[in-house]
Length: 235
Image (tube, rainbow, N blue to C red; front, top):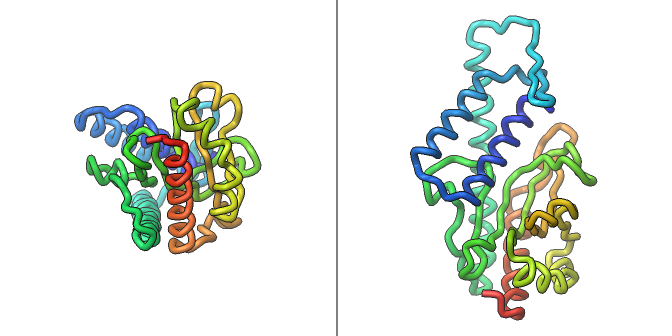
């Protein structure tokens, strides 16, 4: 795993922790400080992180090289953050044309933290929501490859939401025009239920899809999921 992948995975896991555990602002600041500490301590882009052990490069960094690296990382995060904002804006536009208004958008907007994902509530249930962001799957056909990920999160709602909606999976796939993936069985066994749309990065790690395309897919995924949930009387 490269330094960049390690940092991004940490950010993703921190975000999922904050979604599932609404902790206080002081605790959030501690997590943010820990994240900054990690970024200062981990090795350069060619370093690896494996089994929690780090391998440092033998080369000595030039004066200012660390600062340049931080600026580059910050720009990458800002660029993806801007990309996500465009995705959500496009989704809002498409859904507005269908007469659907989005509920509270994004945990980071609500509590003022910068993250690489956006959350959109589905219906009135704040525990069932759509999330769009980037990820590096550890298993499956996209293992180790960066992806833009759209997922419907239904954790803990197996009988009331997940299983009824599973019966509508073909309807959802037909509407969005692509395959909808599920979590691995061992993940579902611990109560995490997700429907996922994957958009893999290019060979150079670049995003292959423009924000308007992803925004439209997000909107259609939300729209058909909402319709199916209403039909199933899931509110």
